[in-house]
Length: 275
Image (cartoon, rainbow, N blue to C red; front, top):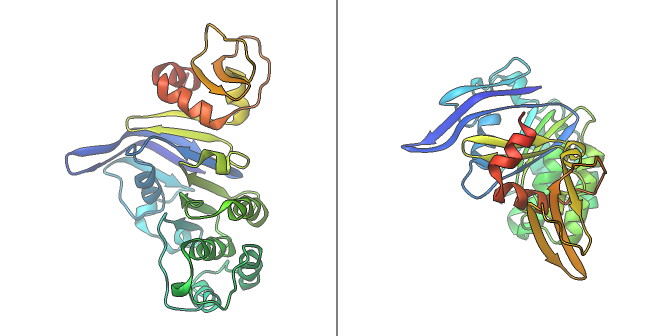
């Protein structure tokens, strides 16, 4: 389990994260959402130990990420938004670097890359941006990590590749693995992320499962306007409305509409999910 307590980090005089606290449990694919500049990438780099907390703490199964203990380094994988065009064939890169990881499975690397329709013999520095991203994703999944931190993994992928990504993540990660995926492309990932974290500079506005969101908010896809709607979006043939769920009736969560609801009513929604 990952436990974050009163985490704070600043770039010079500019605070990015202030007093952030939450728990992340195994067996979940967390969607990390937030406006530009709220510190999503900073949080991921703190989680994997590339940055040191200036305030508060991060505990990963009794270990601090910034200590860079080999036992924890071998259990985690951080995939940045921009990946390097390595001067090597994909299969050679994977095998050479995978030799440093006890959990690396070369057969899984080849299998995932084949699903992505990328030739393992192709040079990475000759690949398109999408092919390169898929190669790194394949390598990450082949490392069989316990903790994955992905920053905008679907950026640069075409529509079929996004489908392949969702399938690969659900098929090739362990049931007890913890994945934290930062994204602006909510629709790309809404079928696999659960719970949802919505981050603000000075608060975790929400860290809730889709079931919890549905219990507290109702997503109405009809045509009749609701007077208590917190969010309203016109769609062809009707609208999407989000309002407090006072009847206990279930509805299908629309993550984009939910994020916009939180953005428009931060205090109201934060109180709903942080009581």
